[in-house]
Image (cartoon, rainbow, N blue to C red; front, side, top):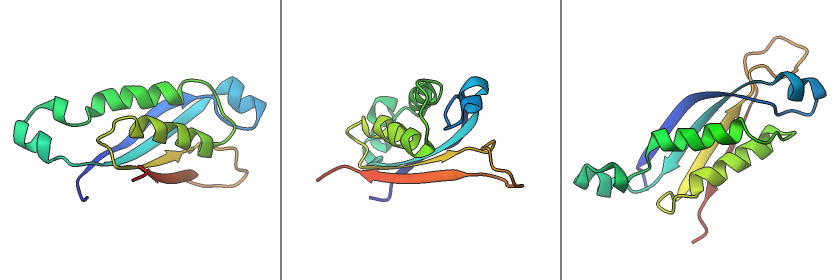
Length: 121
C-alpha cells in the first residue's frame, strides 16, 4: 500500500508530563499523523465518505491531546494511534508527538516520540 493521508503540525494544549507543573500549567503539543489506506475508492467517487475526513480526524486527535493527562508522550502517542486505527480502512498509522516545551535543562528545538502500528492480518 502506497496511498497515504498526512496531517502535520496539529497543535493543541495539553497537561501531559511527569511533573506537577506540567499538569498545572499545560503546554503545547504538536502532532503529525500518516495514515496508510487505499485511496482509490475516494479518487473514483470524489466523495469524502470514501476516505478519512481529515478535519474530523483532527477534531478527534485534539480531543485526546486536550483530554485526560498522561505522564509520557509515548502513552499519548499510543492513544492517538488508537484514534487513527479506529477507521477500518486504515491499514497502518504513524504518529509523532512533539513536545517542544519539554522540561529539558538545555537548549533544544524539539523532543518527539514516533510510533507506528498496523492492523493485525
